[in-house]
Image 1: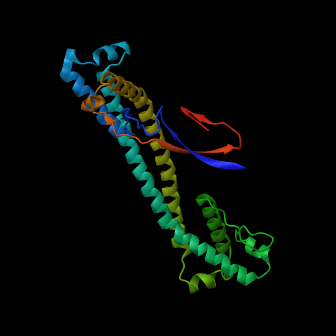
Image 2: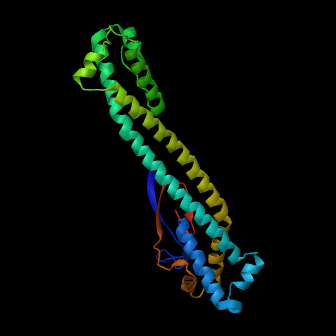
Length: 272
């Protein structure tokens, strides 16, 4: 038989709690940039008396150069946010323009299926991706759907007066103008292309920002670790440099382990 045994991870004593200070590093670029400004301001204010002087020299860290890199990374971040915003605007505009057109397309094919009955080939001539069962298998992609609209439009216009398109009855009944839909599709395609362009520009800006900032972030992590160790008797002093220090007591963690009969499992001083 298997049974479930709950073990508490601790050192030497089941009731002991951890008092080790933890450095909480900012998760966002902007917060990390603020941290750099705080560290540099504190270091500059202490001048030669700064406890960071030896550490910075040992690790070839120039906070002034890091600040310059941070300013450049900030420009990239602003560019990223601008491009991302334009991407979202164009994405939404594309949907607003094309969704009504796509509703017209699906309605038109539903009408044509009713008109032609089991003559699936006739419905397919209008651009419908129709299966052998008669079901229309619409593609999910925007551009592929615009191609279906184009084929529907071309088939409709292929009927030269006095011939009348079989679709005209449905269009008239539902007050649908394929000319208006054509204009909407053209604008939607432009918005779609702009979305792709802004997306690429945003990713380029993100990559540039991260490449500039990654070494600086590594410096800040190292500085934070150094300060916590330097102020080991009172780690909260590292907070004066802008770092967030967690001194809260942490209860032992609960871990659930399955142990087979007669199997031994050890955890520090606990043996089962």
